[in-house]
Length: 327
Image (cartoon, rainbow, N blue to C red; front, side):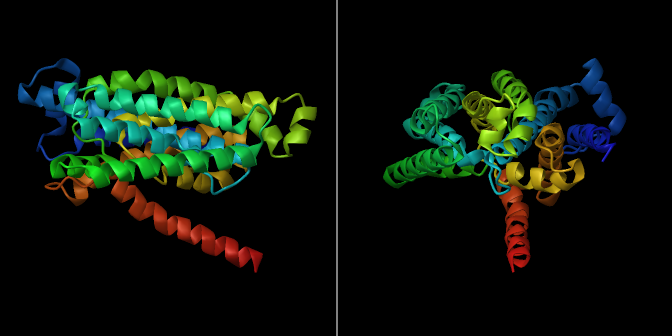
């Protein structure tokens, strides 16, 4: 589709503006824009510049990171059901965050939680590279990711199970549901460099992923080095997704659903799907975050819950569709 990227860019821009203007505080359009751009308006300035703007920026960054990572993973593994959490980065980042909540470090130091989550994601990427080996193929990567994800998930459950403090356990559960509420520019400045660096690395993989659709042997004959491609994929995904989990918690299905919806519109070419999925992921997450404010304005509806409620039926539809095709 010739105009897909411009249309997605316009949609993202509109949703970004809507995210700035929609919220429980009843403020007019002119008042909101004046507070945002001129800093005039008293308490409205605080709402616009310190609450809504960082929330919208994180929605943009996190959504783009999840969509792009999902498209890259599906392209490399040649599996339409692959998603960023497959290599264990999300679960490991969540484990790092959970440990800070359980030990009280998150309360003592505001940046302890996102920093620990980033450390967990980095450790997971190193373990995956070590387990998969320099010559390991897609199957080795999948098995290593599943093992690390299962181990991190079991460790997280163990922390919850042994937690003597019910308030810490409740905080852990709520954080793992995923949310962009109550985020500040501190979170934006912490996550943005990692997300942007990871996305920049993933964007360079277009030609290699196109070649990988023919198989690893054919890709090597075209001058592509699968080992280098895998290294950049893992590091880029770890940086982008790890930083996203660090500031927003676990948000699922965006990296799975968005590439699926957009793939038929780009001719199923991974190089074209990458930028489209980044924009599509940003649009989906911004729309979902707006929906959490409209559906339950007086309750803290978690973003990860809403994306799962929408994504799970879509996932079941994909399975049913594949079953009909095979029959």
